[in-house]
Length: 109
Length: 337
Image (cartoon, rainbow over all chains, first blue to last red; front, side):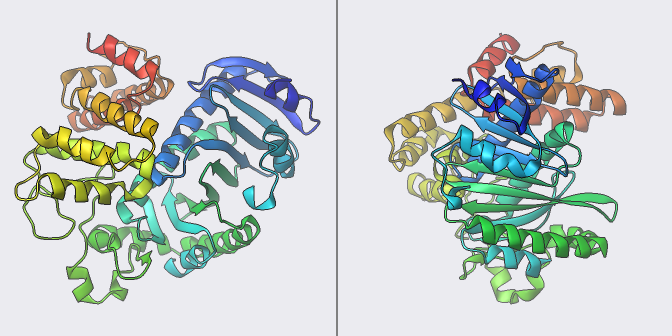
């Protein structure tokens, strides 16, 4: 099952978008404005990759940001980016584990 | 504010902690020696762009967590204070204990909000230029004093300070000969640009120690004369030899060579792009967004030559930093055909 379908089936994921690393829209689940989300995510990803390179932190795996009511998780793959909007925001770690089961240790999150 | 940041730095795994404002300007930082002021200024600018982008998606964001293979970057929104907005950033390695870090960051954020609300930030910002050199000092200890903290340092130490390597790119090189440990004499501006670009590309593979490695390599390849770009090939081979992974070594060589093929920032085509005189729409998304923003700014304030120059240099830097992207290569081929 693709990452998009995998997380799209989670009840806490309200919508999700699949895009490429340059910010081009590929697919979406319950997201009416996928192209805009893909463009913003693409730019955010490139900026965070740049920050990681400046700091010597290695390859970017995920970016998440949270507010009072919802959170957003961006998972970076070798050739694509999956963006998921999550409610409640405290469920980010759960969705992150679904996307990256290898990172199940508490110290790794 | 330094005391508050020090408490976060004391958490195991934290390498640096800094506060920057809504414009991506560094307000204050504490960090281990490699996270000097120049690097923190550079990273503040980059993270400022990231925060602007996040606000497009979620205006009420409170925290950001970026996970990398070798560490984490954590941001906390400090909100508005004294007429500006501020963000706390924490750089950590893989040994970070997330639970401890969460508590320490929450405590620090609350204290910083109070400090910023009471007007601490403007005084820190005012002190920044005068103390820039002191803040990048590699002192005997493992931590670096930040802006405003130089009053805590003995004057003899200040005299021995490494020069600030800050510029718009976060790196700069002295054009004057000097016997100082960190001063690299360069023959001309092109040689300086070459060193900055090489250090930036090397940082992708070795992290913030890149500048130190470049300085050491320059001393090896040009021990008695100012560094000249004619020694670029020799310097590149010296540095590449220090990268263990053969794939990374090859990518480093290619990236430096590609970046140096990009025309300099004073090439008229860059200015034509940012002013819209050449109505080019790049395939590279970041450049497209940059140009949209630049054209709005230039149009709003009139054709101010300094502003155009600034955007032209920014656009050139963006292409140089991403010279290995196929979209960037396509765009450059079209722009400079």
